Image (cartoon, rainbow, N blue to C red):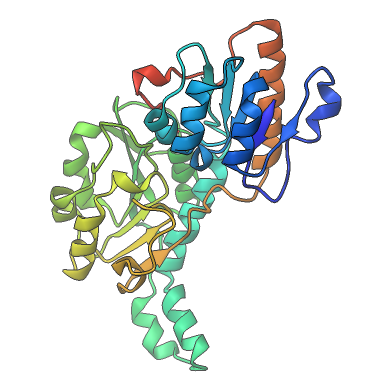
Amino acid sequence: LVYLLPWDIDPIAPLKNKHPYIDFVKVTSAKGAITELHNSDILIVAGRYYTPELAAAVHDIASKLRWIQSASMGIDMFVKGGVPRQVIFTNAAGLKGSTVAEHAMALLLATMRALPRMEQFRAAGEWASDALRPHIASLEGKTLIAIGYGSIGREIARKAKAFDMHVIAVNRSGHGEGAADKVVAIGNLDTVLPQGDAVVVSLPLNSTTKALIGAAQFEAIKPSAILVNVGRGPVVDQTELRTAIRDGQIGAAALDVFDEEPLPSDDELWRLPNVIVSPHVGGSGGAMYERFAELVSRNIDLFHSGEPLLNQISIDENEVPQA
């Protein structure tokens, strides 16, 4: 088992004692993983490290490989790079829902309570209570549109209800359990968008969600609304987003994901007013590491016994379950 994870914490090392029949090999780069692939049965890798070079090596030299476990929920990098048909693929869906939802609420609260503006005054040493008050709002009684109602979207709805918000969830079916007051199908998105004081996107990226939020949606969103994206960057058309912010079509944006990551230093989003740039850290913290280790451990046992694995996905179908 070869694993390539970008975390300061190593959740896989403690599994060595639990699975003594597995040879665990930690690598720190895609190049290191490629070096080990010729003798690997299992590869654990974070999505952003599944580079074109690593994907090519998986296809060309990993003759023994039988299972790839992604440390990410989104599978767009694996769809792009491809996974050999004989290789089982599993992702980390469901592990980060609570943490990403918490980050979404933090971004929303920071915007509503004018924390970025407050920080500017702090840096200048100004006690600007009179200047700040007109820019501070409350979530109480506001409506949140949760676009995506998988594990993240359901947690966003639950947390938003704790702040006394009204929640409308949007998914493919128009049905779903959870805390949302109402669930509508994605075909009705433009109908419900004008009701939203906050629009929170947690969708994965696939052929049906790319640029789902574009010019027409920014026309529908109320001018005071806040857009939060903790799903995938390309779900929101960033060209149209920049225009919407410049033209006052939306009140603010708080983004944890982008078309290109890292976000280039010359990108206008760094400098546009009413924008929070978060460097794709929404899934960090919490008990995610322990939950991921438990998922890997359970899947090792299932793999060893020849049973179906948890979170197994067919990459060939190019379909991404809602995360």
